[in-house]
Image 1 (cartoon, rainbow, N blue to C red):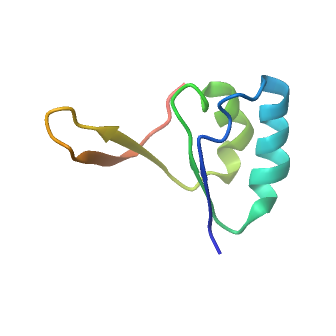
Image 2: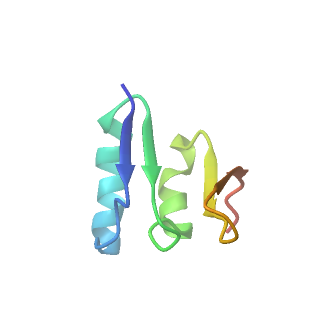
Length: 77
């Protein structure tokens, strides 16, 4: 069963972020969907998790209307 985690690392320091990614995300479920903000998942977090990431998607609010835009995303360092 998939596990969905919203804003998971907002108030977590760097040492504990690494531990959560390696010890929880990797073992919590066969499929873990993480919905972080841009400040929660940067280059350091990507390096820790990159071998386990199947796909990135970027979700953006479009300010002109109440819709959102979802696109496949290539993480670049």
